[in-house]
Length: 302
Image (cartoon, rainbow, N blue to C red; front, side, top):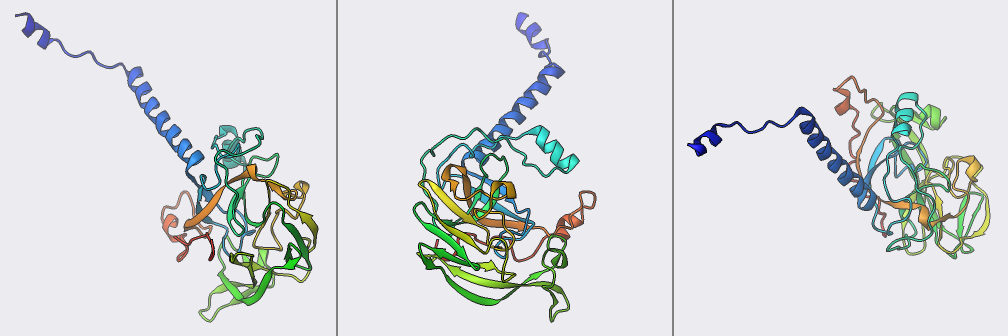
């Protein structure tokens, strides 16, 4: 009789507040797992400018791995809700994360190779740039009349046929590269960009854009890269805020501490032409650039 009475008693219902808290805890664990993966394994990266053309175009999305060089104070991904709001709503363009105070050294640290494409946090900033490793500790770097000179020897440079980059909303050629827009044989508009292929010691080969005979970054005095520092440059040599320029010029202020390197660019996941509209679902598909997904960024000799 007692057993029958107990079975007839309905199970106690979970309160609405408890159910909500259970769901929130589940979402919190998912968020922590994503942030941990971004901090220690890999994270996505968006190309916001033309500084790494022709290898990278504005609108490219990449995978950046965190572990190849070990971890430092810039490795953790810590979102800043206030900065995210200001960037999205007010259009401030600031970084979305919080950078920890500088801490010397790297956990399981390994020095990048010449030619690697890396993300770097400028000293005192909380946003990421993407550049190519040119100089290692002990190297002497000089740029003379646009020619890169490494340890007193001009880097092998070869003039190549112009790169034809399709014009779209993310690459408005007449605005960013006036005088270099052409009409192709297919009737489409292209940016016809002069290319110089550089080969670093050890074999890393990559293309650079060299637009003008003389620009502000075409001359840089011979500088020895200090211990545990790296000299970084953008492939678009006439439009890249890199180690050649002071922090006040939005550059990197010379060679940067290796602790400021956040990871290595691996490959392009997809690329958008700048026509995506949040309120037009059709544009989510039509804005994809063809032929860029899966392109490796490791270079020919890395």
